[in-house]
Length: 335
Image (cartoon, rainbow, N blue to C red; front, side, top):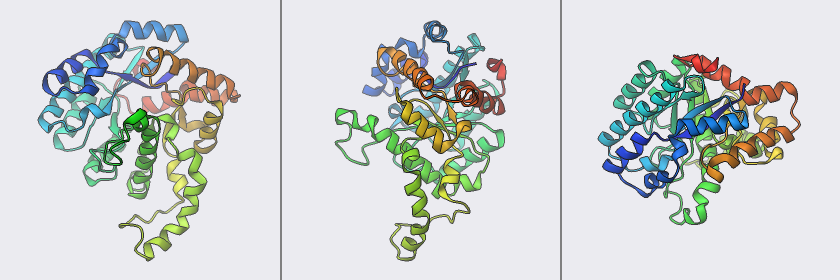
């Protein structure tokens, strides 16, 4: 079974609601991508390339930036109802996830509705919350409940203008900025104590963990330097004392194959994270040729990376099947 563990969706009812209540260029740009909500067209493509199941993760986090709380709660409900409707219509082909642009009591209430009443699995969170890191105390109730339910969390990157005002030029915010922010988010979850406090938390990253596989050795070397810098008041603030090397925590993340065609990059990620923590994921239908290129390239990279039969099976669907079934109220789509 081939499971695309990181494909994108945006129900038409959500785009229309955002257009009425919080219009933006980010939201308007979705109008020309019917594959985000056209379930039948998605399934035709899935059948063409041999993908059995898609995990539906909401698209384009920047459209939530600056959204007033009362609007955000309503848009969460629109997103959840729309995604659940697609899953209900095609339960063997789609698994839906919830979305949590931030965390507060109302957001948690809406997530419980999505999980308990609609049967959605886990939730998408963003690599920062309006510029605040993911180890912010406001997010911890979500981590606690996600761990208790064994519900996976999908991190989607977003790089806001807090870094540089010119970063949107030439799509630098997305081409390099998003993998960078994913890397920062993962490290904040480690150094901020989240992965220590919640050892069974399951988190999925986009783009094969960003820059983490390439800089794992460098990060490990800083384990000893952090203590020295902290003693000299050069770290900029307090930090949690880790009980294990930073790389041990980082290898607990699950990471998708949305890296375009690069067998070498795929093997680098597999070497760092291990065969049981890499998931086939494509970013469909974003990218060129309505997302077809990303899916075909990811499949071709897996073919050309010369994986063992066991690792290939795990990456294409075995890991996702285990991860999703653990946190699902409605595991029908897993066969």
